[in-house]
Image (cartoon, rainbow, N blue to C red; front, side):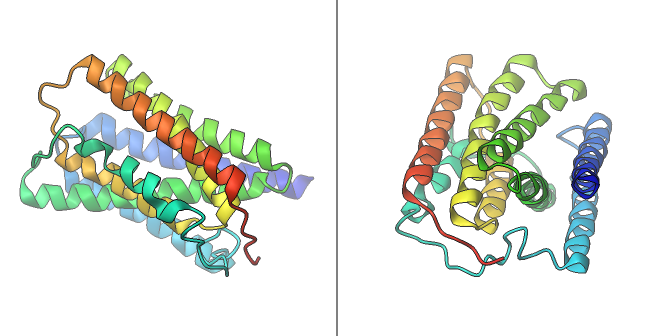
Amino acid sequence: MKTKRRELAGVLARIFTYIVVMSLFESTHGDDAAQGWRLLAAAMLLGLLLAGIAKEQDFGRLRFAPGTPLPGRKVGYLLPMLVVATANLWHGAVLRYAPLDTVWYVLSMLCIGFIEEILFRGYLLQLLLKRSVKVAILVSTLTFGLGHSVNLLNGAKVVPTLLQLVYALAIGLMLSVFVVKTGHLLPCCFFHGVFNALAAFSNESGLTMRYQITVCIVISLMSVGYAWYLWRNVCVKAKQ
C-alpha cells in the first residue's frame, strides 16, 4: 500500500511540476512572444521525463513499446483521431507567427503533446489500471480535462476556456480508452502534439461564439463516439 501511495505521489508531483513550470511561462510571456523559450522549457521537461523512463526501463510499461501491432482496421485506421487533430484548421489556415517563431511554436507544441500523454495516459493511467479500468479512465480523463482550467489563472477568456475544458474532457476520454483498448501510447502522443501544433496556423479572425460552440460540440461528439467504438470493438493485449 505504501509503495502504491509513493508511486501515486510521484506521478502527481510530476504533473504538478509540469503545470507550474508551463503556467509560469505563460503568465510571463503569453502566447505571442518568446516562442523559443517555450520550446526550451518544454524540451527540458520532456527530456527529463524520457531520461527517467529510460533509467527505469519503463517504455514497455508505459506502452511506448507494447509488443503487439496496432490493429489498423479495428481502430478505423485512426481516421477519427486524424480528423479531430485538424480542428484548428477548420476555419481556415494562416501563418500566425514569423517563420522562425512558427518553427519554435510547432516544436514546443509537439513536446507538450508528448509530455501530457506520458503524464496522463502513461504514468497516471497505467498506475490506476492496477486498481480498476473504469476508475483509471475516469480519473485520467478528469485530471487531464480539468487541468486546462489553469489557463484562467494565466488570463485566458472564460467562455473559450470553458469550451476548451469540455472538449479536452472528451479528447481525454478518447485517448484514455484508446490506450486501454489497444495498448499503444505513441499514436496518442502524436495526435496530441499535432492537434496543439496546428494552432500555429489557425485562422482566428472573425470567429463567432456560435462557431466556437459548434466546433466544441463536433470535437466532443467525435471523440466520445470514437471512444465508444473502441470500447466495444477493440481489445488487444499488450505484452508487459
